[in-house]
Length: 128
Image (cartoon, rainbow, N blue to C red; front, side, top):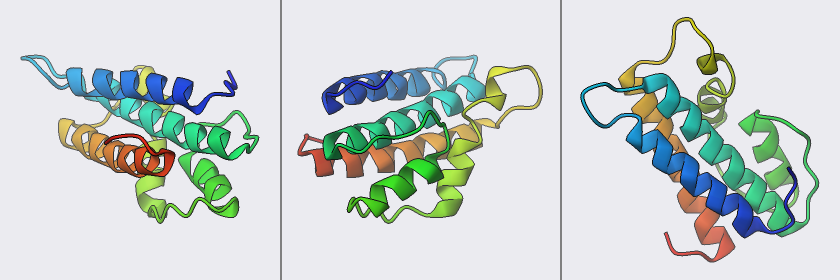
């Protein structure tokens, strides 16, 4: 999906952030779902930035690649590579059985996604 309206990407990103938060509420916490949706939120905000700038992007879940595209087109994000790599690690593997993230790691993933969200919304001229 390559929507031409960045607000379409923003709406999807907001849904993912909501799902990430909900996954950690209640008696049973789903850290894998929280981390996955946090990564998806960040990915969609990066794509919203790129769409707003008119930059084509590949089908990728790697936030470092999307961040590089942003910075190479004048969107100077300043995000740490380690944080982007950490969050990117939740894009695929957590959807399958096996060892997943801890609740603490899921909370960290959400925090990183929220930082990316804040930056993107400011850059796009949207309220935080």
